[in-house]
Image (cartoon, rainbow, N blue to C red; front, side):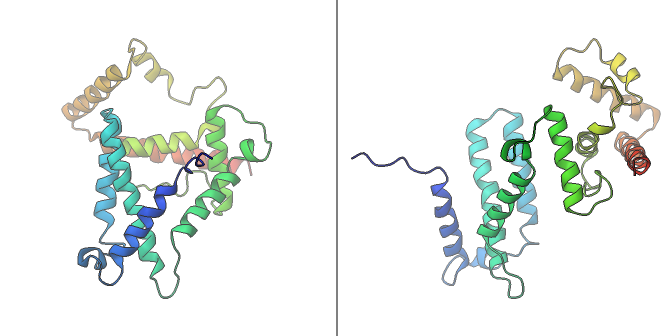
Length: 228
């Protein structure tokens, strides 16, 4: 009788076992001295290297970088397992994200009717806000994120506040400015040109964008308050 197909994810157990060996007595001295804080720089580095592999369409590199990123997750979970006061392990991490995915996808697991992808994302953040006791869908976004990433996060969470017709307040002039741009490369060139213009005028593009984001968050919170 033919062997049953190997279950996807089986190799993950090998990674957990290797990490356990490295961290245990008789393992690796470097791994043994690491802490959550000491590993932060590696977590950030591996994240950016993963992003670079995606942006450069380096599929082999992406596979490798995802492995390095996964190692960071397993490493942190192994450290947490050793905590004398509040230990948890990789199973707790996995069980937590599984429960979260099921709870936040009722259109998949509970028969709820799904709308557009944008509506699904907005509903995700709304449910997250309720779960965490947040007063706004924008709460919990790390304000230390780079400006463009921060802007994308805020906009993604505020789909429900877009004006009828799909146009947010103040977007009309910007849409007119990009109407002749046909691809992402052209859009990137425009962004770079805007930064250059800002430099010529003595304006800090990052600070200007962050100011606009704060104003946007203020508008969202005002709209949320008006619905209460």
